[in-house]
Length: 196
Image 1 (spheres, one colour):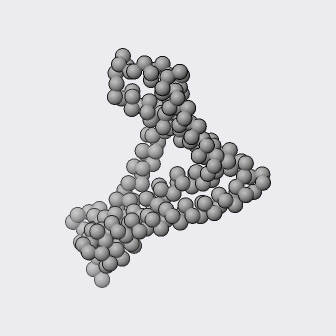
Image 2 (tube, rainbow, N blue to C red):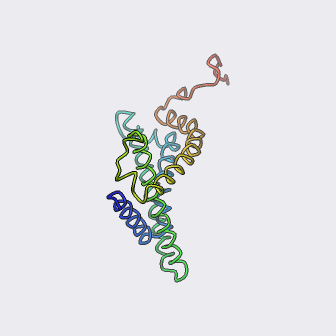
Image 3 (cartoon, helix red, strand yellow):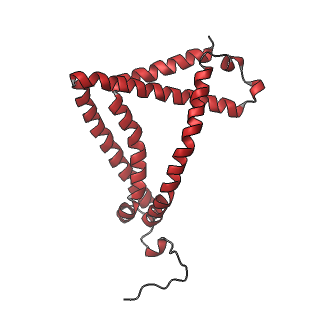
């Protein structure tokens, strides 16, 4: 057993225990809250940006402040709702145990993602013949390798999803940072404005 094995065991146990204590619903809501709040804060910029610019000077700082305020409202709104739901679920006799078991599972997956990420970093940073023995000979090496392969499979799919959202978010950010109606580019540069 190497030092890396001990590190991996501590990470897996700590993450699983944290998931058990917090519960599965709360763990999943925590993971989702950040992403949802970030996306919504950017999509809401066309509505929140003008309000922020009216309150904060310079205009760019007002737009950023508006995005931050929307992010915080959405993030904490989701987290508070999730905490209330999680407590109710935990207090339920039959479902409380299932929620805790799901939480331990989420914690275990989180630990495996960390081990996979560490494996990817070592693989990228060191040539195969120079990989330290304490890493290469660790009992958890195959587990880290498998986790790294899963990460390499999943990330391109997530990237394609992010690419699909990029134009919508980009348009919202452009619209949110400007009161000018010409901030959004037209499809035809020579198009004349509509006449009444």
